Structures are given as structure tokens and as C-alpha cells.
Amino acid sequence: MAFVFYDTETTGTNWPYDQILQFAAVRTDADLQPLQEAQFQSRMLPHVVPSPEAMKVNGLTPAQLVNPALPSHYEMVRAIQATMRTWGPSMFMGFNNIGFDENFLRAAFYKTLHRPYLTVMDGNSRSDILKVARAAHLISPGALRVTYSDYDTPLFNLGELARANGFNHPNAHDARADIDATLHLARILMNEAPDVWNNFMRFAQKSTVLQYVLDEPIFGMAEFYKGRAYSWLVTRIGVSTTDKNVHYAYDLQFDPDYLAALDDDELTDRLANMPRPIKKLKVNGCPVIFGVEDAPSGTEARFLDDAELERRVRRLRDDPVLTGRLVAAREASLPVYPPSAHVEQQIFDTFTGDNDLAVLEQFHAAPWGQRQAILSSIRDGRLRVLGEELVYLESPGVLTNDQRAHHAEKHRRRVLGLDGMEPWLTIPAAVELAESMLALASTADQAHLQMHRAHLVTWHDRLASVPA
Image 1 (cartoon, one colour):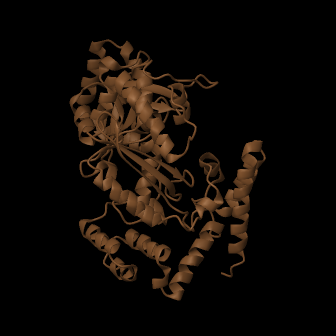
Image 2: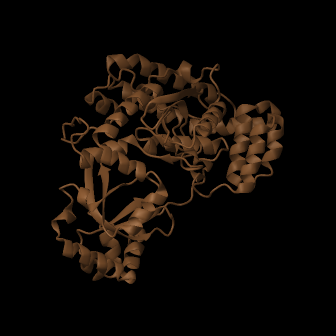
Image 3: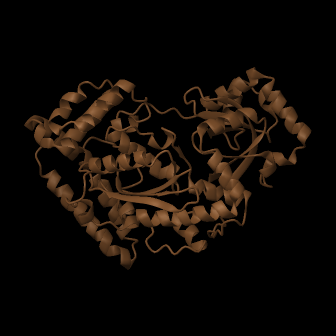
């Protein structure tokens, strides 16, 4: 099996609206020895406001963000997509890639009219070294050296963990350097925690996870909140009615007879409160699951004898009415979010149909002057909106004066925040953030933050002077 380790540097953390600025990837063999590598950069999109916090972390300057010699965002994503396709089938990994980098990668593919789910299609799979490291610390303590915070919680940021395990990480938050740190940790985990490593390789495939939770009447499950690990012995009781990748597992430390005696309102209230007897398990999210024999000593249900555990499982499996009530009550306790009006957040609304995928191939291959006409053949309204934006960004000269003026004004209003409570970062909000950071900044950070604040103010004044 080949692995692809990748990392991104971005304009912020708000993945639907921020963007990738740097992307690096290394393809390795099954022993984690490098075979190929690639690095890509892009200049900043004109409607994306960089967060001063992100700029402080990655060290990029305003001149680097707008450097006209760099490829456009679209050109960068095209190159990333082409490279990753030639490197498959592989397992795609990073450090917190499932929680961060992959969201940005999927958004970048979506907004440039590519299939978003490349890392889990065409024989590819995914995992996450952060998840492996946390699982090893829980299940195979000692495999990794871990430092602790003042609150006695283990520190699992990449730089801290890499340094604790003998890696000199002088260029933290450079995409390529972060891959070297991640590979260093991966090699330790493969060699020092082989059972945990092999478990993650096994459960990188959604189908394998699904089969396991269906076949095993009792299994272990762990999650991590605010630096602390929590583990349970559970049994699967159902699947979400809105997301087939979300299954529900029952925490066997709770006697199901108690919950069965509650009426529907009481049950919904109970399942909304901590500790929750029903856990969400994403079969496509590389969950931390393991055999009963590997459950950590702090797992509550381990204090029950085998006969009682088996009784609780039978109680649930023999009573589909109860399990149906439990799933319904758990779903009733979840927040309901209205559909987003913004096309960037509509990425998960539906899958792109085969007919539209064929049209998109034509779009990417055609000269820019022909692409607007091709968009009219796309059935998915989201993709038509995104495609029109791409034409404006990449080749505005093929548009009419009115069309160009429309897009320019839309971008101006967006970054100035003229339309109310936007979900993206605006220039005024970024200036305010930069000023609050400057008040607390060290001498070493002052000049860099001042540079970004000045850039933001100049940008604001230039756009504010443009007549609507």
C-alpha cells in the first residue's frame, strides 16, 4: 500500500470561506519511505480576507499573499488534483487532516468544479496521524513520549509532539516541513504501537468499519475532548435518518431498563445531557474503535461482569421498539441547522450527477471564451454559480462590462462586510483582530502584525472609495 502524506497552509480556519495558500505532499511506500513529493502555492483570491492569526502562525507577508508571479487558486488546485490522481490508489494521511486539511481540500475541489471526495474514491482511503497518536497514548501508553499542559492534559499539537519524540522542527507551519514531522511520528507509531497502527489501517475503509460494528455485539470506542480521552464499551443500535455514515452506539455502562422506563420527552431530555448514553460513530471518519480486550482501564463498563454486559446487549437487540425510540430521541436532541444561502456551505447538500461530471470535464478542457456557454449545460445550480465565479477570476476579459462590474461589486461588498452578519472574515473584522493582537504581541511579532494591519487598512480605503 502506498501512502500520501499532505499538509496545507491557509488564510484562516473557516474552511468554506478561507483558502489554501500552500499545499505539500509526499508519497511513500508501505514502509513510509519517500517515493515522490510535490509542492504547490497560490496567490490569494480577491474576495478572501486573511486572518491575522493565521498569518502570525504561517509567517506569510502581504507581498507573498498577492504575488502576481504565483499561480492562481484555480491553477494550483488543478495541479493538486492532477498529481493526487496519478498517485492513487493510496491512503491519504496528515496530522489532523480529517479535522482540518481535508475540509480545505474538499472545499477547494468543490469551488473549482472538481469532485470533492478524491481521498476516499477510486480505491483511495484516508487516516489521520493525530488520531493514531491519541489512540496509541490511550491504548498503548509509552509508544510516544507526550508532554503535558499546566492542566495535566497531554499536548497533541504537531510541533510539541514531534519535538518530544526527537524531531527537530525549526520550520513549523511550513507545509513541507510539517510533513517531515508527521512522517517522523508515523514511523514511530508503526514500529512502537503496531497493533494500534494496524487497527487504523484496517478501519481506514468505511466498509470495514461498518462490517465490524454490525458483526461485533460489544466493542470499544474512544473520543477526545479538550485534550482528554474518553472510552466506552458500546453496541451498535441504529443509523441516522439524515446521514447514512452516522451510526449510533449505546454506552453499556447505562442500564437500558432505566431509559426504557422514561417517556419520550424525558428520554429526549436525558439524551441531550451529559454523560450521553448514545454515541455518534462516523463509519467514514476513521473512528477509534477496538476490541473489548483492548479497552483502557478507565472504561466504565469494564466494571460490569460479562453476564450483565451480555444481558444489556440482549435487552437492546431483542427490543427494536426501544432502540428505535433511543435513536429517535437522540436525533430529536440534536440542533437543526437551516440550509445555507451561501454556495460555499452547500458542498454537502448533494452529490454531483454523472451528466454534470461529464460537462465539467468539457469545462476544464475548453478555452476560457467557451466555458461560460458550457456552464449552461450543468444541471446543478451550485456548480453554475461557482463556474461563473471561476470565469471571472481566471479570464474576466471574456465577460461583458456589466458582468465584470457585477462580480467586482459583489467582491467589494463581501470583503467590506456591507451586507450584514456574514459568516466569513471581513476587512473591518480583520483590522479589529489585528489591533487586539498587537496590544498583546511580543516584540518579535509586532512588525509582522503591523505589516498586515497596514495592508488591510490600505485595502479597505481603496475599496471604500469605489462608488457602488
